[in-house]
Length: 96
Image 1 (cartoon, rainbow, N blue to C red):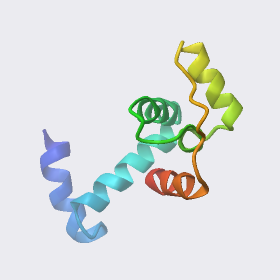
Image 2: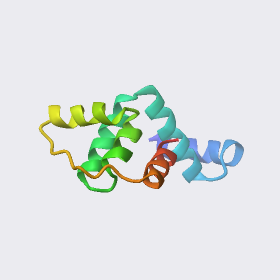
Image 3: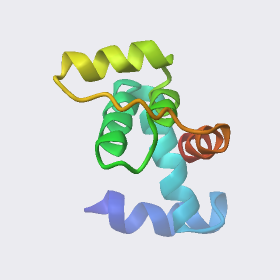
Image 4: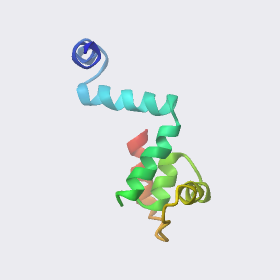
């Protein structure tokens, strides 16, 4: 497929430092266009216990109570641990 084979070869030397930077930028653009995917990513990371509740809410771009409601509406358990400020900042860097 030309998207995965040809585009990196054209874009990386001219516009991106490396293929990883291109992929990161592509994901950022995708999340900006389809913001509902942020919620899906946040829920999945939360369910895998890779992020705290607070970090997941931040990744989703929601307040804590709104994210809890999403989890409850899906019949998912809400943990009482919401996470530290450092965890939240790290999670936000992942989606920026």
